[in-house]
Image (cartoon, rainbow, N blue to C red; front, side):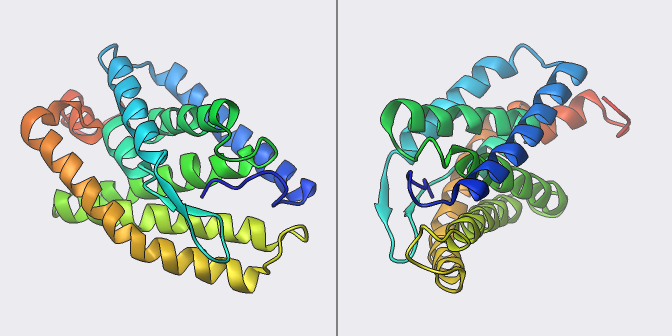
Length: 219
């Protein structure tokens, strides 16, 4: 899902830069306003490092960009939507700025797909479904999060006149391929979250929030 330079019209790239800046700025505001538990800082670093390493393994797909493990659901479930978003921003940004994985002009779009759509969709899916079954919740969060993030990538590239494929090709290809690969993402998400839930369930964002606020009021 790392869009290279030259795939997007500049007006589309600019729109995504603005949208991403608004959401990321809101996340930073929320983190500062609500405060952050000191124990979550090193956890965020570890999560970002693990996702960074996993994302470096990717392969091309026809009619789109590339497919790989994203990890937005893992970040969202462990860190929550706001800190999870910032962790993913650091991963995607370093990959683009240091390793050339994804273009600078397309960075806003890549951030929107992987650090915003994937993270927030996965978080709210998990939050809703985890009341019934955390394993199913983790699987669906990982699966749907990456799929919708990929569809956003398909929309951005398909709307760009500089890209050789139209939206009628990019959206189905990105959606179908990542919908299939999302099953693997979902299974990996289940494995990671289940292990943490069994051994250190207190570090999961929702569990930690519930523990510190058992009556459900504002933390």
